[in-house]
Length: 279
Image (cartoon, rainbow, N blue to C red; front, side, top):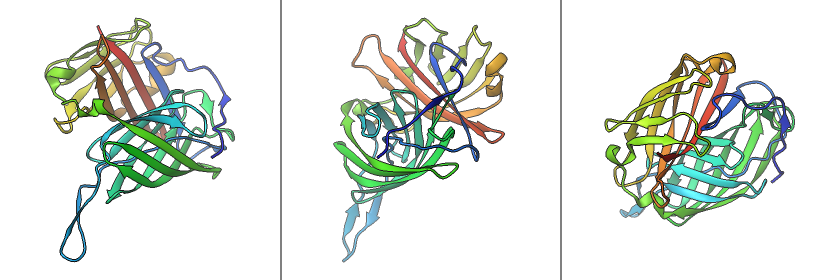
């Protein structure tokens, strides 16, 4: 797989500190792309031949590994529904859905680079497919193929390991609290009913939304939110509905949270990532 190549346009400036803002121009641009990991979803149960029953492996999990193309670290959240969001350490997001047939994985992936950066040919957005195998709650191996909106193609493999953090149960009472970044950015509040609120004095942005339970047995949450009152460069976020996934890390002190979501408006897609600690 070719290494991802980026060109810098202008430095990201939206929602500083707690938020890495990503943007993509869908249907436009192009570039030589070398994205790393994508991943997968959940297939449920299927009927086997000869009157037997074949169980499809679950892809649900928190998955960690390295993007073979770039050497970047990967963190993936896959819900039992098959929704996934993989975050590279350089804040590229890979999102989509996938299914399993026994241990075989198939799915679609969408790649979004950070705001102000592009792939090698100028694209900020790419789409692709994945195939691979999963050993439930152990390892996930994928073969992925991406193309930018202008058709530049890259392919390769990614290998990821299951993190037992996923086996932590989820509850609104568990995720509730105030969270801030290590750089003392705005406070991200989740109340006991799952309502989410943030106000960023640096940009004027006000975030309102919800966190909800996907499956109470596992450490993956669904997030929905939108922005209002954003000023200057951040004005593009106003009114966009974002959806995504979140997970808690209760093995560290204070407790950490990762929230990743994407939204679209006027032919562009945006992604936001919050990495914070309970305050």
